[in-house]
Length: 466
Ligand code: ARG
Image (tube, rainbow, N blue to C red; front, side, top):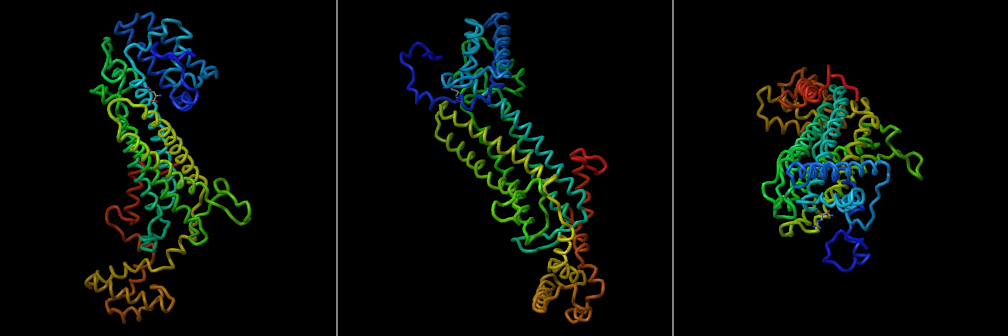
């Protein structure tokens, strides 16, 4: 039995407790970051004269050797190592002998794990940022091709007013942009170095915290050593931003699922992203968006889990913190796989069906507001026009006809102010075109937004190949 503990201990751990306590089963994912952080720490110890430059160099070589061993599948820690930090240190001592024992000077696993986790999360945030941008481009590809394609717009899932399909898709691009901004904003708080806080109080050794922070690419150091090792706000913020992103992916998923039904029929799922039923030969199921919608549960759950884990913890480090890792790891796997799957689904997994969309917007009363607006244009007070049109809609529903089917004579009986130009005004294309207020679905407005997004996403000549 050899632990890294001090001579204070006489007996080894109960094997079940050893397994219960160990995090190596999952924090092995932090290997690269642990090596990066340790190399920076070794360099700093050499710079500051805590160890000799030669010793510092040897530590660095030993740590790089561990990286190579891992690449070749030869670094395989066991439960005996407890966690990634002990595993690396123990291997380093095996490689270097006594010099390896100098690495942990002026450092604790408390600042070390915080450092590793922050570097790891920062790297994942950068991946997620790129994935979001790619997904925005996939949506832009559809938007650019569907400025003049109309889709029914809904409120309360009841037909409301027709929209440009591009406008509908641009709404998701906006939502994703807020996600991106949230991740980049919280990245600032992730990217602060706790290294050098040691166990909780700092160290008596002459270390240079800014040196390690700088070579590890941190934007600064925690001002308070207690806060440095006690803070997991960044994990909560990440879980929160991830949850909001998942809400957005889930809402789009839900629309895709609806659009793909027989009842809506706005999209067709291609074979590459849909699945069949084991029993019903006619089925084609939207498993991808369903899984994305379903996976929200685990991400929201981790957010709740992290908040609950933190809320009663006295300063400073407590072992409860070990629970942060699996939550963050699972959030990252989930968010990254959902972004990838949704990008593929939108890129090659569904086709919009223009004829179905066109017939959908022709066959409803979603132009009723436009009749009212027309009357307002002729001087009728809006509330009065609204009541008049309500009555007309009721009559049309009874007669099983649409507003466009009423004759001019019938319209003029309703109001003598109505002329032939009404028919043009209530045609779906014109209904959409007329929404000219800034940010509205009018084609000119949407075209402006498409231009803005082409610039932001670096899309040339409004042409995109994703
Ligand atoms: N495995 C631990 C964690 O994930 C590392 C830090 C342990 N520190 C300690 N004082 N026991 O949080």
